[in-house]
Length: 249
Image (cartoon, rainbow, N blue to C red; front, side, top):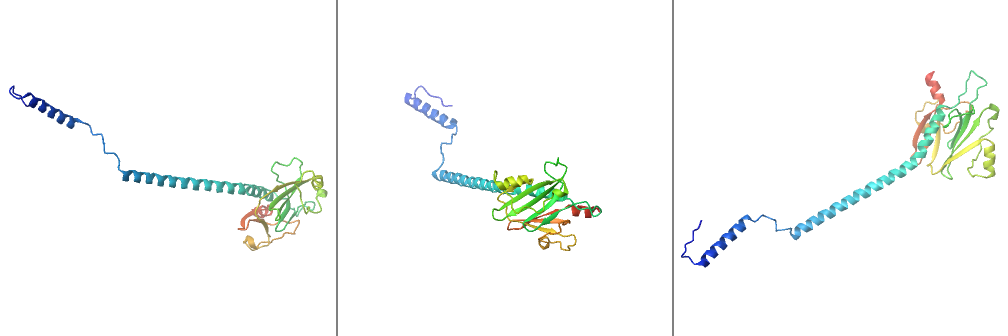
């Protein structure tokens, strides 16, 4: 500690006190980082943020496009999945002829574009106590799959032939005649190309593309039916009552 003498001039005293005050103030001032960012640092930060925004935008766009494609694919596949589910159940419940009973009756006929057979399965059940004659037919001109059904309660009520054309035009004469004959028709649009193939009990080929493309044994039925969808020929195989009966026996 400096001691001042009375003989020292007053200006020396004031100057000494001022220096001590400046020294104390400089040593006790907090560090506040007054340096800031340089222009280069700001440019780098801005560039990094812009790159991140672009990457996130591309990822978001890719996710939206994938979701849209998946939604479209699901909308396309839903009708096909419903058709396959119904066809599978109806084939497993197809009416088979009993060789021990001469009064038993069965029907199965098909080619590459359609199949028709008797079945005991309907989505909502059968309160009339009969079987259903069902027909799946692909119309290449309209790219649609036609599903028609008619209840058969007596053997003499079985039609002599499957109609060559079905209509869904309400109020038309063809529709009135169709309803009078007992046919109910549904049409599924925008269906890819459909082709049917049939596995005979006597066939030794395990490849569906080598199965028969026509079935004319009206009172007998194939062991299985293959359905080819679209140009890529995506295939589904459905086994009939014939296969279940042979497996049990």
